Length: 254
Image (cartoon, rainbow, N blue to C red; front, side):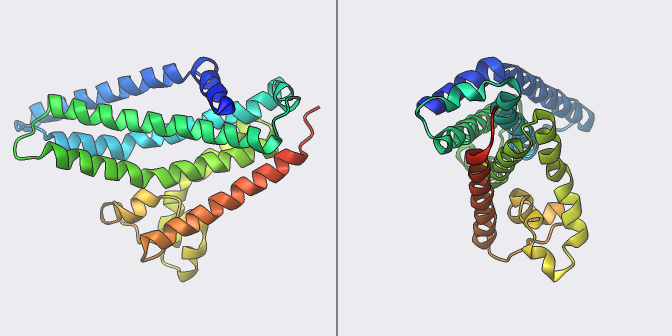
């Protein structure tokens, strides 16, 4: 717990979590303004459900991006600055240190995701029409959407952990991890027509698009069973983290 708490402190003060929170507030404010502008042009009230659902579909991507930045700073950044040496001279094992960095920043990213989901939903309920809708059902739907985003968040933060350990470069970690984040959906559209594509990890990364929003996103899920895809993605996450731990254990920090 000490390592995780330490990571939270480093992230808040050193990796500018407060700045990310401020930027997200501005984005949410911009989304409200856009919806109000659309409402005035249409001449009919926008529904709170619509605002909340659009927010939860879009804003988690920013959390994933920042989660990768957090991991890059926590691992590659400390390699670059040399502060990782101060951690390794302690009696704590390398496995515990790396797990603490990954899990601590993952918890922080999940906390930010939940906070953004809650804030977006509450603002939507306050600003926009709630006529004919159930507040309880709205929160249920929104949190279900958020849960479907979690496997992708966990995958990218695990991948960033491995890349950070391999490269010891903050810039390379961010660039390499962002590549599938931006292009996996496009690649999936091209290869989904082939039967073998379902055995590629790239087909399973966008879990929300595959199993919650597949009709809107025009995506054919790789497996019929959501749980099968989740297990496939989870197995890759475990392999990635094991590889990261093995490399970190042997990594020379001098």
